Image (cartoon, rainbow, N blue to C red; front, side):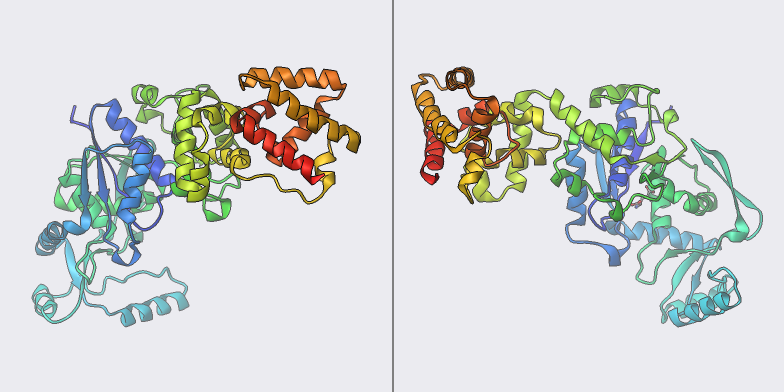
Amino acid sequence: MKEVRVRYAPSPTGDPHIGNIRSAIFNWLFAKNKKGKFLIRIEDTDQARLVENGIQKQKDSLKWFGLDWDEIYIQSERLKIYSKYAQQLLEDGSAYRCFATQEELDKLREKQKKSGRITRYDSRYRNYDPKLSKERSKAEPYVIRFKSPQKGITKCLDNIRGEIKFNNKEMDDFIIIKSDGYPTYHFANVIDDYLMNISHVMRAEEWLPSFPKHVNIYNSLNWEMPIFVHLPMILAPDKTKLSKRHGATSVEEFKQAGYLNSAMFNFLVLLGWALDDKTEFFTVEELIKVFDINKISKSPAIFNKEKLDWFNGRYILNSKYDDFAKEINNYFKQFLDIKKYKAIQNYNINDISIMIKERCKTLNDAIMLTEFLYQKPKFKSKYEIQIMCDNPEQCQTILTSSIESLNDIQEFTIENIESILKSLMTKLKVKPKNLLGTLRIIITNQKISPPIFNCLYILGKKESIKRIQFAIDYL
Ligand code: GLU
């Protein structure tokens, strides 16, 4: 069998969309499974849509998911190649120059619209005299158009859908080289897939309508075609195409919202692919072993945000404490402001991991759960401090005796803190809500926080006592 060579071909026109990354993941897994090659091809021929750092953004997203590549190409550096093949098609009559101005084309559109016809180019230069065409090309701007077949059908073979037939009557003479000399997506894409020896083209279903264009270019160049696999659409739960109005869609947004790359990887693989009807959790190594393109589904995949949250929570829960420590540290480094990040560095990140891991669904939760480390409690009224107690006197007693108890601890460990505070509760005959609830408020200023014993432990004896004293002074 021919060596497997697949590619991810992003256009650097914005923050990578998770739909694109899903394509990258499928291609990468397939390459790894077949011990083939995974290429990146930056399709930057639409100069008007490029964004700053577009290529870097693509690379960063791939790296975040651990998708390494064997070769990388940039289409804007290959213009001569496309031009050479366009010349070849011009010479053998498979393409022609079109000199229609924008104004002319606008008029044509208007006319077609008015008479209720489909708006499209009317092939007005298709039979233009080649000599005249060459002459005019020296002085006038033009585009090169492909001579699409006007009769019959174009048969396109998709690995999942089988043979798809397109009626040639519906095809127009599309542009292959624009007036700025850049190729269009359709043309550069085909030329490159062929020259780069791509064995399988796996790309989003959105490209299915363009499929016959590509097949016709292959046919006119007499080139053997790769195997095509159009990956199912990703829809939102309301069955419309997943877009901004459904929430986060770019890799960067998910990263910022605190999703783990491992959880997202696993979740994205299941959008349009399944090993069977029950297995959901896979490591990357397992996926490399079992990934099979014949199991890619034809029907659209639904992007279920609740499921992603659940997945992420499970990944966090099952992670090792020291791995989670690294994750949160990285996350804090990127998304906390520098002052807060520095303040967090005063604490042991592994202790933080132990304190919060079970309570985090996303890494973003870690920010909220650790805020108390660098934000000293502020009170608006005495009532805030006393709220968990049965009466103000009880609150006063709890606070003063907590200081004494904590002071008595020789070795300030979580276990010792827990045991001394529990005996204090018995001694004072107060409920956990009264004592632990009050401490929670004055230590963390939050009703929900990590376990209070861990909070006290991480803050340390001195700071814990200082915060209790601060509350006493406030009363
Ligand atoms: N540049 C196209 C895109 O960003 C690539 C489609 C393909 O893989 O052929 O979707």
